[in-house]
Each structure stands twice: as structure tokens, then as C-alpha cells.
Length: 449
Image 1 (tube, one colour):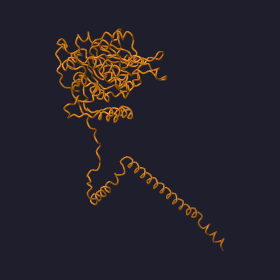
Image 2: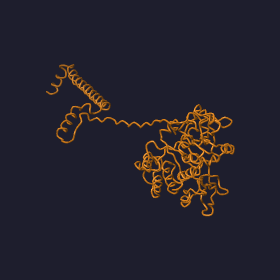
Image 3: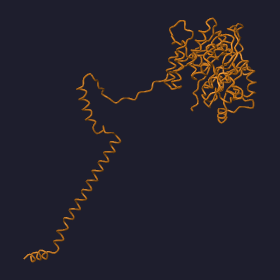
Image 4: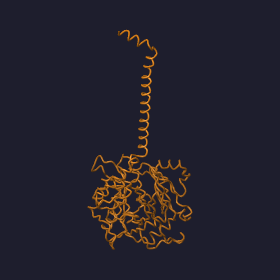
């Protein structure tokens, strides 16, 4: 019976089995394609959601919930004020203080100049300078130095305003040793020896552009009688020449007589710059007056008018401006460390040495304070080459040579110690206002390294 039933079932409708088997196949394919479409939309939605989060942030979708939670927290927690808008605004940088020039009562013309007959009645004594040290007598392996090897005993003695021989740069090495630095061409030396009034500046290591004095503001008398000397190294001269500042056959660029320095005495270009800044009486042995300008400044005032205004009119032998914001060495130390102007350990060693030797804080309320500030600005110095002025310049240079190149740290100490060591021999230093410095020069930024 079973075979017959199978036969009847198979033969009664031969097409039907094929149809019966096809329906499930269609259903399975449609289900499969539906699943694929569903997965496609799920993945598409997930990708779109990820893109939105990446672009607009998670808070975009839950802003209402967060506001509700923050409201609950603000009502539950007492004594903690919650601002309506918790988004912090970016803090604006404070504006830098601006400083302006003030009026300087200069004479109308150079023709009105009159050197006071009693101007040179300052303290008189004779200074000689160490030319060569006998270092072989006390040490066999000491490297010759431009500033020499001044002992603490020699340093202490050098502050006395008496006839003496002191260290003041340009110390030669022993026989057979190389030069200690700041070598000049003989032709330049001969030219500098003829100078009686000098305006000088320097650029070492291509640290600045060349700022020419404003020619129309310089009198014909000064153009003919004042030496304008710019000390540079070979690297700087090449850089300036590429920029179009090329010396003529007499080594001039405008009013500047370019003097090339070979064999720089220090690796620190800032310290090398202190040589012409402080030692103009050594570089110009015939000069009666000198004016120092930092290379960031352009002179637009006649130098003879500056000598009359800052020296003759105040009966001063040395003139320098006070710092525009800081007057205490303590503040200057902190500023140098905050801006990483020099190695902090070296600054601390210098500062501790000065404190142990009597340096005290500046007291602006003291009616007997010797200076209006113990921190100078230092970019303009006007000086007569008197014995006391020359001594102070040597002392200040020796501090820079021994310690850091930050000369604003050592100015107050050198001045106060000189004054304390010679109570009966005044050093007439006129510290003028910084706004006056801004009136006689134009300030530029240093060249970017």
C-alpha cells in the first residue's frame, strides 16, 4: 500500500511539488534581503550619529537632561552659587603699559653751546690699567682672559678713588698665548685716537638692524667734529651688506664709521657688547665726552645738545636714565628669573654676594636716597671722561665680567659701593627720567633671531 500511495501522490499532480518547494525559497530570499536592508539602515544611522557627536558634541543630544540635572544640583546644594551660563569666557591678555616721551628743554642750536669754565672741577686722581698679568707666577694652567683674573682683594682695592692701577679689560695674555679678544685694525685705531667727542654703538652676532642717526637733526658742527662709531663683527657686516648697507671706501655707512672687531672676547654676545658700552675711555683715549646708544635706538637729537643738557646744565660727569617700571634690584632679579634672561643659579650667586656686601632694598620714601632708582634703563649713557667716571665704568664692567651680563643687576651695587668707599669724594651721577630718553631717540625692536 505504501508504494501505491507514494505513486498516487507523486503522479497525481507532478507540477505541484515543484510549486510547493518554490514558495519557501522565495520567502527565504525576501527575508534575507529584508535583514540586509535593516542592517544597512542600522549601520547608516549609527554612522550618522557618530558623525554628529564628533561634529557637535555629546551635549547636543542631552542638553535638556543636563539642564535639568544642573537645576536640581543648584537647588539641593546650598552656599554654592551657580551662574546661569557656566561657559567660561577666554581671559583676555592684559594690555601692556604704554610709555611716552616728555618735553626736553634743549637749546635751540649748537651755536649756543658754552662749556662751563668750571665744569672739569671734579675729583682728580690718576688711573692706570693692568696691561698684562704675571699669571705664570701663581698658576701654570690659567687661560688668559680679556677681563683678567682679578682677585677679591684687588677687587676691593679697586673701589678706592686714589692713584692706582686696576683691571679694566684689554688684559693681554702671557708671551706666546693668543690675544684675549676685541682686536681692531690699525687704521681704525688711528681714526679712533683722533676722536674727542664720540657717539658709539655696536651690533654683534647680527642681532640688530643698522639704525642711522637722523641726519637732518644733526648739526654741521657735529657732523664735522663728532665721531659716530659702530662696532660690528664680520658676521654682522656681511649680513648688513646683503641687506644693502654697504660701507663706502672710507668705511662709512651714513654717519656711522664701521669698525670691525675680530676675535670677540666672550661667547656671550651681550657680554661682548659691554666692552664698547662701558669702556669708551679705553677705546677712545683722547675723548673728553662720549655717548652710548643701544643698537635698538635711532638718535634723532644733536649729540652736542645732549652733552649740554644732561652734563653741563646739571654739572654732572655721568648721566643715565632710570628704568621705566622697576627701581629696586630685588624686583630686577625676580624679573630676570621670571623671563629666563639668564641662568637662575648665576643670578642667585651674584645677588647673594651683593647682599652680603651691603646691598639694601631701594626705599622710594627715603628723602636722602642717593639716586631716584637703583635700576637703570641703560640704553643711553652720556658721560664726561673724568677720573671718577672712568673708575665707575671700569668697576661696572668688572662686575659684568665676573658675574652675569645683566648689567642692570650690578649698577646699583657698583654705584653704592663706590660712594660708600669714598664718602669725601663725590661721584656726580645724574639719573634722568626715562621719558627724556624716549624724547631724544626712537625705539625699535631687536632683530628676530
